[in-house]
Length: 173
Figure 1: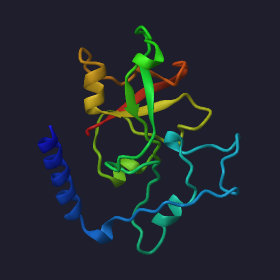
Figure 2: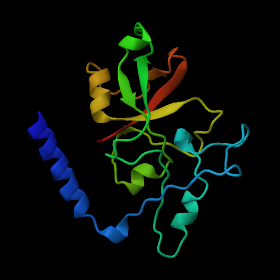
Figure 3: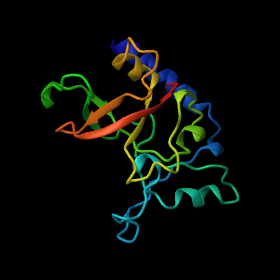
Figure 4: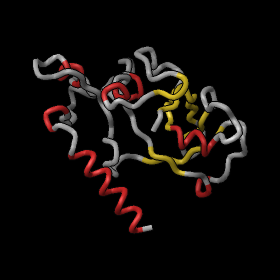
C-alpha cells in the first residue's frame, strides 16, 4: 500500500510540475472584519465568500479566477459526517466521513473538471436557497451503486443530520 501510494503521489507531483508556472497562481487572503459576510448578504455558489476573486480575473494578466476553501490534493480542508436521506441514519460515530470543499461557481471551469451529470453551481445558489452539492463520480458510485445517477438525491450533513444538500451535479473526478 505504501509503495502504491508513493507511486501515485509521485505521478501527481510530476503532472503538477509539467503545468506551466505562469498559468496558475494561488493566494490566501487574510479575512478582515470588513469582509465578513452579513446575514442578509448573498453568498456565492458553494457558500464561500471571497469578494476579491473576480477582481483577480479582471487584471491584465488574469484570465480566470475561482474561490475555494482548500486546493485539490492539498490534504487540508474540513471533513464531515454524512448520511443519505431515506436511509436509516446511524449514530454519528458510525457514519461515513467525507471531505467538504466550498467553491465558487467558476471553480470547475478553471480547473477543467468536466461535468458528468446534472449541473454545476449557479449564481442563483444563494444562502437563502436550498442547499446544493456537486459530488465526484467515485463518491456517487459508492453511495448509489444501483442508480443510474445520483442527481436529485439528498445528503444529510452535520452531527444531527439536519443539513440537507441536494446533489445537483457529478464531477468527472
